[in-house]
Image (cartoon, rainbow, N blue to C red; front, side, top):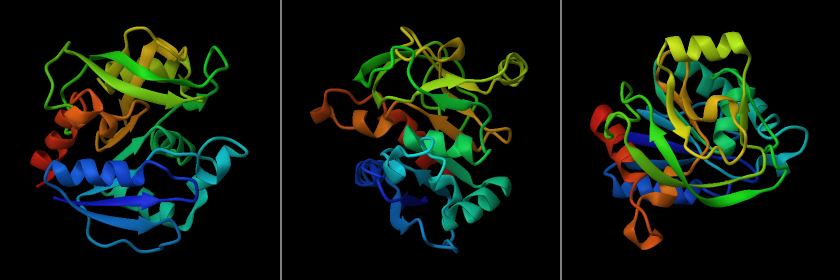
Length: 219
């Protein structure tokens, strides 16, 4: 499986996800946000960080980087796209997932492992888990509160597009949503960091199943 990890100005988890994907068996290419063309890829990753200093709105400027036209085109054509933390914010700003990410309910930066319920395994991203399984992944964000309209929430629930929910909802997200799929089910926005829970030396390997599931599905 060939994965491309895109680095934007301010990305700081690009190396982390590249290392974790390689450990899971992927061939990883590092790509710069100014690229207008991409090589053949099975997976595109938008990593965490603080793109453009999180000025304006988190992810809003990065969503207009040159590479994002190609990311949107590839996603529309069915290529898998994973957006983690700041990458989730970029996906929302680019219209690849519904809703928005706003400041946490407590208006504080939250940085700790959190408990999550796996609410759907009907995706290439969560196929390595059990329905209803509780996992722990780290979060590290100030603007991770996911919000959407009542109609959008109903559509997400009806289409089984919510794949992870917080058990303690550390940021006040609508319906405890921590990760959700795009309309084509090939795009995932996830606020917790699976790449930070992929090695026993970090204290958890609960994120490894997500990365391995992608390698197996797309390999």
